[in-house]
Each structure stands twice: as C-alpha cells, then as structure tokens.
Image (cartoon, rainbow, N blue to C red; front, top):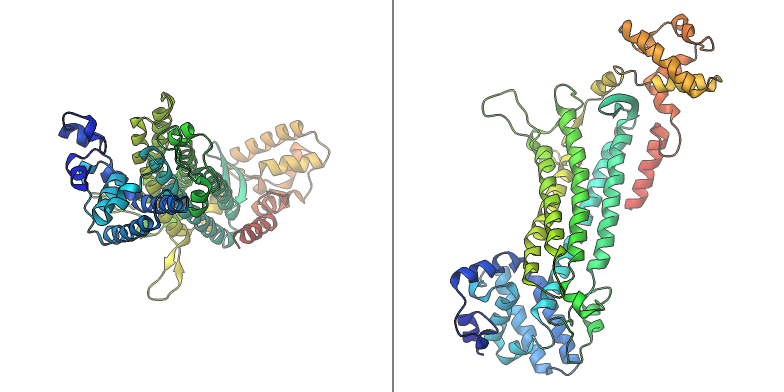
Length: 477
C-alpha cells in the first residue's frame, strides 16, 4: 500500500475490508489527540529498533540511514509545531510512520519489521513514564528539602500536637514538618521501585507471540537504557501493572499532600491562626472583602480524589481482560497522563509555596508560609498538653502508671474548675493529689520541659529534631 493510500484510507489493514470505517467509529477509536504526547518516546524506540534491525542484517544500512534522517526531520517538525497530526491515521504511531514513509519511501515501510503496534505502544508508554517518574522524583526531593529548610528555622517553636484534633502533647513545629518529609521520602522510594519495573522492554513481543525475525531484544533494551526485557510475549504486550503501580504510588503521594493541605487550611483559619499563606497562593471572595481563601491546598485536597479515581479506573480497566492485547488498553493513557500532570503540577506549586521564590528586588528567597510561633504556643497552653508529663513524673516517683494516670485526671479536673493550666496550680494543691510531688514538678509541666524530655530516637526534643535534620541533609547531598 502506498503512503497516499495509507493517508486516505487510514487503516494499515484496509485491503481486508470492503467498506471504509464510519466517521463516528473513527472519532470514537482514535487516540492521536491525546497519545501524541508519546511522540518523542515513539521516535526514540523506533530508532533503537531500526538500529537493531540493521545490526541483525534484517534491513540494509542504507535503510537505517534513511530512517534516521526522516526521524530527525519529523522531530524538528513536531518541535516547531508544523507537524500535521491526522485523525485518519488514528494514533501517534501511524502518524509518524506515515510521515516517515512520505519522507524516505520504502525504508519507512521497513521500520515496522519485527514489531506490532501492540508492543510498540507498550514500549512508548514505558519510556515516557520512566522520564516522567524521574521528573517527579526530582520534585519530591525539592519538596523535602523545602520542608527541611522550614523545619530548621523552627526547631524551638512549640506546636500543640493533636490526636482526634484535640490538644494532646507539645511538639516541635519542625518535628511536625519532618513527619511529612518521612512521607515524601517513602513516596520517592516507591517511585524508584515503580521505575525499575517500568523500565523493561516489551518491544520484540510483536502482536502477542513474538516474531520470526532474529531480533536482538537485549541490544534494544541496552540502547534505550532499560534494565531488561519482558520475558513473555503475551505478558509483554498486555501488561499494564506498571501504569497501575505508578498511579497507586501517585495516589498515596497525593494523599500525603492532601493531609498536609488539610493542616494548612486549619492552621491559617482565624480559629487557629498558626500560619499565614502568601497572597500569591490565596484568593479573595466576590462578596466578602475580608476573606483570604487557601485555594491551593483546598484544590490539592480535591485533586487527590481525582488521582485516586484514576487508580480505580485503571484497576477496573484491567480486571476482566483475557490475554493478550485488547482495545480496552487504549483507555489506560488518559488517566495515566492526567495522573502524571496532576501530581507534577501539585508538587511544583507546593515546592514554591513551602520553599518560596526569589524576590526580584532583593534576590532573597521569600517563603510562602509564615509561622506564628506565639499563636502555636498559646494553643499548646490551652489543652493541658503536659498532663502525660505529670503522669510520667509520678511513675518515676514509684507510682504504677495506671494509678498515675488516674491521679493526673483528678488534677486536670481541678485545673479545669479553676480555669488554669496544670503548671499554674499551687504546689500544695498538687501535693494534695500525691504527696511525692515536689517543686521540680514545674519543670516537667512546662511546654519547654515536656519537649526537651522526649530526647529519644524519633522524639520531638530539639536535640533529636536537629539530628534528624542533619540526617536528611546528608541524604540529600
């Protein structure tokens, strides 16, 4: 079939059919207007395949040279925005192949030797996703660094730690932020693990059964920087585990962002007043001039549901498919693409919101989050946050913990009735609950004393927090 025929009739299999595809079906089945983002991966994979075909003497060296020349021109056209994407050619692969054949003739027709669109698209998506994972991994590192930077500035700031959104115990604000560094660190680990399984070559599986040509699949994998080849041709063309795994990892990352977003939303409300978010990350109200709304964290919280939905969609897409490739798999791309875009965009804006950006006038980096240390400490003083410290004090005096717990409950009840903190109760009143209480109790009842006392690995004592910051700095180096 000539290039013109391929352009006109749109199907590479058209000699078998007695009537053209309906326009409705053509639009329904076409993917070119969303899968064209795979163009660079498609060209890269095709060039590696062509180089191997020539090395294996399946095509001539002159064919390889023509293919390389044609692909270079196609790349230039796409980058310049002059490449004509045609609906009739259905997808990114046939569009590029048709243009290549138009440019270099028979050499373009020989490129598809030993492969199918089934293994071609599986390869393209893996190559594309591998590069996107690398970008996401860089953003995860940048966000962790930004959080560590803010933490380092707030080691001594006391924040009320919450359970059930009730004041529980005082913690260092830096310690709180480092909890998210741990989450995003695990996200980075998961991305690295997904990348390893994504970075395997299905090309050479052909339609489903392999090929009769003497392909050197390992050579192609090495050329493309892949870590191995898919060992079963049926699995090679139909596997989408890597896409599901990535979307699962992305969903968990978005859940972590959503949890952080929820805290930022609470913290910047007037009822908390713990932080301010820079105006460039907020919006106003159309009728309430006093409002400053945390749109960025709110939208990130909302977009988390979108990404989790894509995960459910991909799992459902694959659950009923028999081997091998089915047209259903065309539906893997839009949720995967949108997941990548959503996660990258969210990470970028959080990197800027947490880490700040240079002031054009001064060159100094200005963060997007301002901490109100006084408001945090005042809130920690409201909820009897050192009650557990009093119980620990009594245990060290020889009282069983359960008895100490009950004793402190009575002390809290007394402080509540007097509308004061535990640390404000007179010593004689405290000794009324247990005679072993001495003047040194006030050190453990202070917020600072409570913080310093938790000087164990993973604890919130400033010394431990500084050690964790140093550990993260070494990890980022």
